[in-house]
Image (cartoon, rainbow, N blue to C red; front, side, top):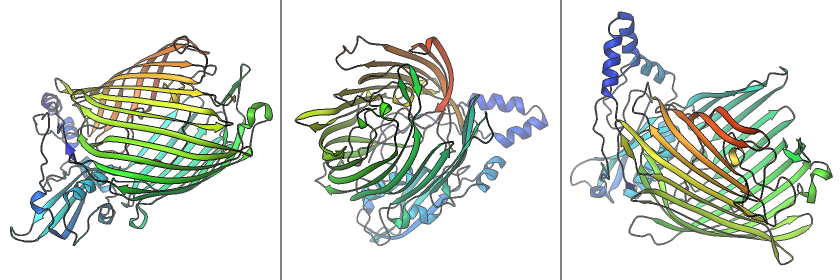
Length: 587
């Protein structure tokens, strides 16, 4: 595992000094200051590459005699300095309300055991896996020498928790919802979420939901998921057993799942917006196995992964025939197989999605081919698909490319063809006084050929499929291009971990139709300025508040301003793991 950019958060000492001098003028505000604020130590920012602080090479191959696991509450403790203790009342109270991670929960994530011979690569990968658990904020694994000549070694694992219970909600003039979530139930890494939605027109109109996830059942790395949500005439439920390829060293993956949903489908037909209901069940099962290949000198792990999948979709309720053109909503059985060649390693970076904590960025490349057959409307349709992805750091920053293409065959012709691609970039970290900032950019394109004639086999640039807060009922097509540029600042100021980080965002959405010149259609820009609210200690999604300007939204109007708040989840990096064989999602 490579480490780059070991920058530490730089506090503004003058801010704390001025605040302290002002508040200390009165006895009451002096107590408030002592209760709330901890003056941080002044640190000097580091730039560039650094070497590993812990060198395992002298202990390579030694027998692991004992493994000591220490878990720490989120406030006032340090995984690097075990003598540090919480000193403020709010830290003490917060820790008292926190369910600290059990030592056994940490132990189950380790790739090494007592009496194994120490392998530094497995130690580093265990550290990454622990960081990947959202209930753990930071982790350090260090060797504890016994004697200089001993053939054995002790290992100490120190994990610093995140605060894992949080509330989130969203409210409009018509409805509101609230959700409470615990991501480390009883300290064993399980997740529980409860949701309640209320419509203000009638008190009896409401929705309720529950989600439960049992992680790493019996140390198998299998997760069990059960969820159910009902809202007026809609509902969704699922039961899932899932084992991802959680590490490049993992060998097998698989999933067994059952879903049942009833939902209103949005259709814009003949200048009318309709919401017919559909109800369907899905049975889904797949399995895969990773075959290790020869590793390279740059510590990349090479694998060939083979997998197969069976998916059955059965419709229990469909729209009337006039809204189900071409029998679009009909039963389907899908048989797929996939072969992929993956090469991956991880780079440690900071200040991407978090403030100062280590983030593991996957780099490498992948090539895959998918084949299979679909049985739909009493006909069989062969499917073929290919794809490739690549990601790496350059002297300009991080780049990734992801492309795939696939379609079905019928009577010797390709139909329901989809081609997708995405280019992502973020720059090196820049400094502006005490602030850090990066430039992010993303380009996405989707193209469809010989698609179904149904209105819902079209693509849009609405909301999650394109630009947030852009919602047009009358504009769809078979191809689109989305360009995004964002300048993100990282605030040096915080109050008990809460940070407000400004951003500037520009987006351009282009959508076209088959047999039409792509750039001879509408081009729809978006401009936004706002800020993210995040917390260093608490496990909750970053929230975005922004003022958006749309020069035009078809069917809505011109010169539209929106003040929005939502989760920040619009920029993701490829993982170079392994997804189940699937057809290309035309979105």
